[in-house]
Image (cartoon, rainbow, N blue to C red; front, top):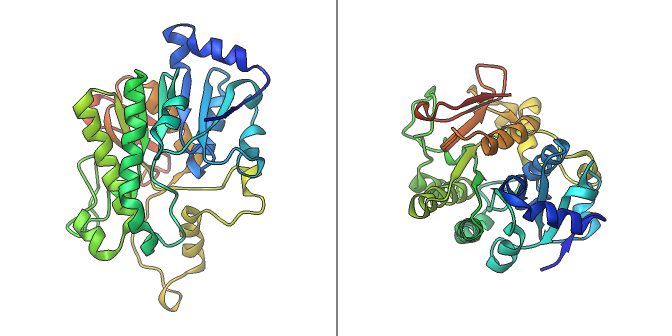
Amino acid sequence: MRAQGGKNTRRKEKVTMDGEGSKKKTVCVTGAGGFVASWLVKRLLSTGDYTVHGTVRDLGDRKTGHLKALDGAGERLRLFKADVLDYATVACAVAGCGGSSTSPAPSPPTNPRTQRWRSWLAPAVRGTQNVLKACHQAKVGRVVVVSSAAAVAMNPSFPRDAVLDEDAWSDEDHCRTAGMWYALSKTLAEREALAHAGRTGLDVVTVCPPALGPRPAAAARGQHQHSSSLVLINLLKGAGDAGAVEDKARNAVDVRDLADALVLAYETPEASGRGGTSAARTGRSCLKWPASSGASIQT
């Protein structure tokens, strides 16, 4: 395990360990160089209050330069070389943190139905188990798991115009039959996260976004468009059979609004269980939990 950070490493370690209040302001973000996670790291650092432990598989500048260039990164960002499939490396990154945001499944390829996803089903669950086990052992106060709308909506039994809430789950058998491997990996990983919370008492909140938007500017240079943005691009181009696009609602949330929502999910005590983000019908990004929690957050 190696860590990289700014010049004030000693100072940051002191901040991490000085009392529960300071610990709560130290958050581990797994897969920190990814699409959603990069925006979350930027959002956390922008507050001036949070120290971020970010896990990446490659500490080289090509993969992490956009993170190191963020305002506040020199003082409050520590990058750890870690793999969610390697428990020891995850545990090292989580140590001293009061919270964690994780999306253990790998980022989707351009085609979420590609057979390559089949080999990722077990690792997606195992990665989730490793992160949550590390968080439980470190007595992390809350874990925010970034799931996906793909874990909610892929179910042929739902009526066409149904409003899907926290009780809606993608049908695992349908996902297997249709080759929706990304949706299946997200469904299995999220179910495991909530089951782990039930077994251990760890405070786990899951968020199921249909996210799209730009990459952070520095990360975008020389890289292909993120697969979530291709959904919008294909709609604008009329991609499909004979240039036709199916007439149906498509929910989405801007990834920058999602980053705000993830911070709120961590900071709001009333939030619990499973929540979703969407701009549908309201024109605003909305993060909503079951009515019993009393939490409904708009950004």
